[in-house]
Length: 67
Ligand SMILES: [Zn+2]
Image 1 (tube, rainbow, N blue to C red):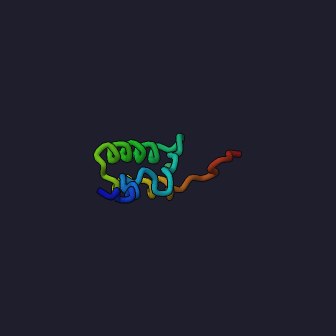
Image 2: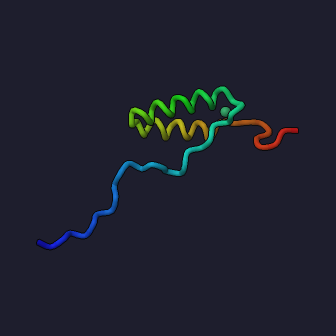
């Protein structure tokens, strides 16, 4: 019986663009991060990616350098 060539792994996309890090000083980002964890636990990847977008797009002043 001929072996079929191994099909490419079609598992869940673990990372699309990589998860954005929530700003540790931002309550909104922290809340979004919690929701993201819950959504991920439920395998609700469309919600996870929505939350990723929200976290990534959440505006912060003086990000990375405070003066
Ligand atoms: Zn934020």
